[in-house]
Image 1: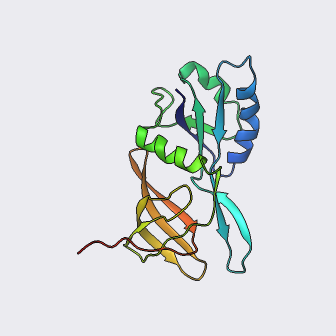
Image 2: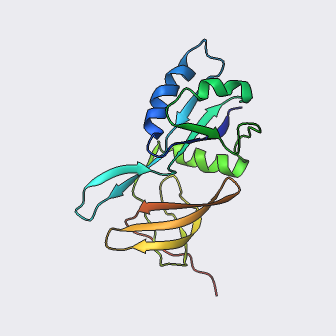
Image 3: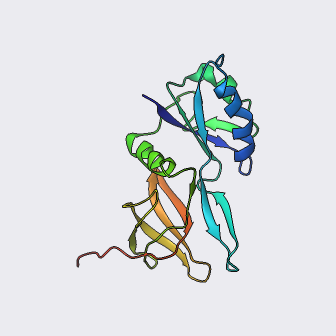
Length: 176
C-alpha cells in the first residue's frame, strides 16, 4: 500500500522541486517510484481575477511505497530541498488522519477550488463541497471584502491554518 511523506522545501521553490524530482521518480531504474503533490488553492482578488496559491507553502507530499534514509540522495536533487519531516534520520510516513486529509484533497485534483460555507471569527465551520467536504475547522480570520477565510485543521501532530477563498459558508450550530 502506498504511503505519504511530507517534504519540506524552500518557500517559492515548490514547482521547481516537482519539475526536478518527478522525472527521476518516473524513471524505471530509479531506486524509488512515486508521485509528488504540490497542493494549491484557487484564490480570487477583489477585482475578480483568479490565481493559484500554495495550500501548504513549503510542503510537497510524496506518495510512494516505503521510504528510507538511503533514498534521500534522490530527493535531495531537487531545487530547494530542506528535509523530510519530521527529520531525515527518522523518516516517518503521514499518520492515517493526515493521509486521509491529503487523499481527500487529491481526489479532486491538486488545486482546491473556491469553497462554499458560512461563518464568523471563532465559529466552527463545515465545508459544504469540494475536497474538504464535511471537514470542520475553527475560523481564525475573515476578509469579507476579498471573500477569504482562514481556518485551523489538524495536520502532522499540530495545527495548520488554511486560507481559502469562499463563496457561501455556513457556521456549525453549537447546539447550545
